Image (cartoon, rainbow, N blue to C red):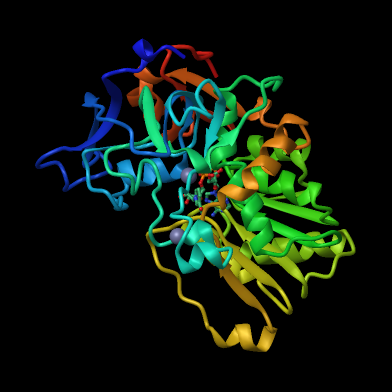
Length: 378
Ligand SMILES: NC(=O)c1ccc[n+]([C@@H]2O[C@H](COP(=O)([O-])OP(=O)(O)OC[C@H]3O[C@@H](n4cnc5c(N)ncnc54)[C@H](OP(=O)(O)O)[C@@H]3O)[C@@H](O)[C@H]2O)c1
Ligand SMILES: [Zn+2]
Ligand SMILES: [Zn+2]
């Protein structure tokens, strides 16, 4: 790759604080998105400069932008942590390779990294959160080369679509590992219609779950989940968590399933109601794996865990070491992404954030592409 194509800086869409607009976050978000040029200094040893092909928009980005959830690096910063691209400079052994950038970039040497918990390394960097000004809604990003996941040259899926592997696909895989998901398990996914939830359903089936119950709100989306591993859809629309539990029990009766014990429940909605539903469904020898983030607390009678001999576990990201396996499952289309991704040009980022916030994208995760490509439609 000739040195002349290495840019002098990065074109980035940054989240910038909007002065005096904090009072009513529903009408005017506390931030706006502004295109900025970030001059690029020399790369550090071991770093690679990735020219971004695509960056997916995660529920977490909307949480930072609209809901006042704090990023570790303070704005102005570039959001976006679901990145694919091509290495254009830096570590010579990587230049020219197509890559996925893991969402979590661990330090690789601390106690947690050495103990196999690299995804929760305290010195980790996450683009669009704890990586200074850098994120995926940009032309380029410098990253430590050692964590990159190579996309094989013969891969048939367009590189920009593969951005979703970094988070929407990899995070539920790690959630499955955290939940010890194995053949024969009975699984419930709360928020199954979401960007992460629909991959949780696919992983559950691929890993051999006996039955997958998917809980969501929109009837259209719920109906589609059956093509992606959900055996029994259950609507949470206009139902309280207790009413969802009642419906769950009747679904179990109809399908001759034991409602009272052994369910692994994955909470992927990132809402208070979704978390309350997951806890409401938790019963004997069961487990809740918390994937979604809600700013609202929930209250729970902890002693029920004792009486149920049950567990609640959190899960954060996915260690880079699992990415080659996750990518391979996607390239073999054992985990299907093509029908679940839409693309838009990155310069339409503002309209696209609104589009997603207003839930006008159906069940598709939207990937922004800096080169102006994009299907433009729905
Ligand atoms: N742990 C991690 O490492 C990690 C990584 C990435 C993301 N996250 C978090 O995971 C959450 C999901 O992210 P995402 O990108 O998948 O968001 P998303 O696409 O907005 O998905 C959330 C889904 O939950 C559904 N939902 C809302 N309330 C519900 C309820 N009461 N019961 C059942 N379903 C409900 C929504 O349904 P409708 O569309 O019908 O409203 C939506 O489909 C977010 O909180 C995000 O911050 C965590
Ligand atoms: Zn995310
Ligand atoms: Zn570490």
